[in-house]
Image (cartoon, rainbow, N blue to C red; front, side, top):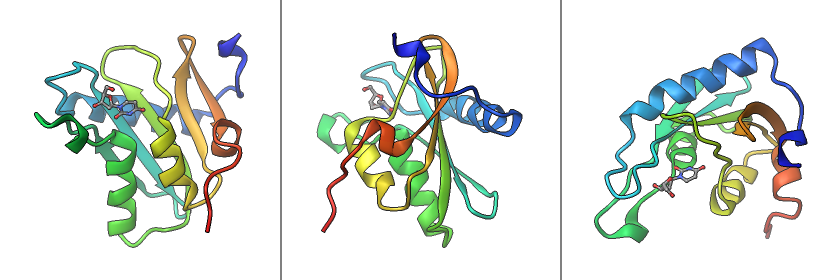
Length: 134
Ligand code: THU
């Protein structure tokens, strides 16, 4: 049963997830209607947000997690500890495989996401056990 995945979030983790949910309102998702927000937390405790940005040319769209990752790296933060992902309207969402691979570059982050209607915390490596590496 998928809702048994992971563990319960701490208060701080739940707060990070709420931040992701708040930012999801800014998503540009006119094609899917699936508005996603993400916040990446760095080792210093800073948060970096992103939303999904869709495009009329669908492959040009990008997920919220990779936008948040770009914001963290742009801010000079490469030691990352967690990513929270949430939708604007109470739906389950886990990072896709491409986002997991992109995030894996920066460590085995905690992934805070709504699964089976509950906010849960998993390690990235539980979701992507063997990321590609050179
Ligand atoms: N999406 C994200 O931004 N993050 C996820 O974790 C899952 C999917 C986006 C991609 C696309 O814009 C929309 O949600 C529907 O697939």
